[in-house]
Length: 321
Ligand SMILES: [Zn+2]
Image (cartoon, rainbow, N blue to C red; front, side, top):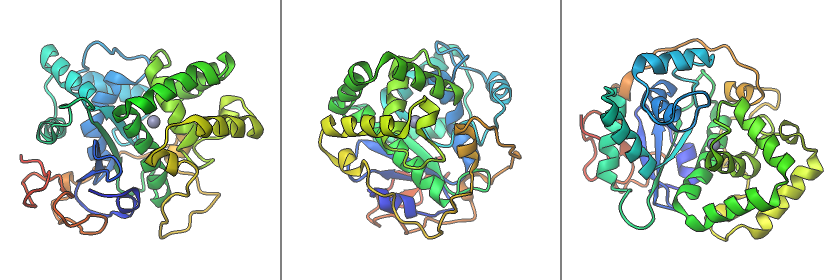
């Protein structure tokens, strides 16, 4: 169990799994590298979110690699953070089995983790969100915090029906047709399938309210001026349900050690701005075999552990090989 501050500050050479303290239905996977994150979740992203790809069948590895290359991306950069409802993830694994798709080791590890965590049970199914440790491929310390805040809002959307209903009403009633179209264009430029309404409104709330940095979201990208954007945010805040996410809206990001430079652009920011950053494909070690679980950011109660090839912490959620 860990707070936003604890997760943001967490550093480790192995992938780590947290339950989010303010909403334990949200599982946060903090990947050791962008590569491991991508190898685990890119096929799922293609299945549920990416424009121009089939959403009724699972891509095999060759087709996935082609899709990533055609998007001008790499395994590492296809997405810098991920978010899914666990019932959707169960649907993905069922579809992969149905389609006879051979999944990779990382994907199978996620399947086991989901089974262990049993987040699909009960009336309020859980969510999985992810981010990666800092990387020269596009995730600096500040970007990591922005991604975490953004993805946590998705976690609440997937696990809190009252919040999801509020977002749907805001999308339908508070936004004008022009504003919805502008969001659709903006998200389409980022690779999201603009034809998936639920995806559009979920991303709208995340970018509008929980991506607090102008490198990643500015009013101009939805064709609005600062005053129009401020009015939209005020309207959202005025009527959104109370709870931890409302308390988070407008709050500063968790502190971080290095002061960011306002002139620094990250790869993620480049993509959001529609400028494809050139990135070298780097091979990262799998599962940080040389490292051990870092206590930083964890509560040391066994609920935070490395997602390693062997169970490493008693009572943890580490995934066996
Ligand atoms: Zn998002």
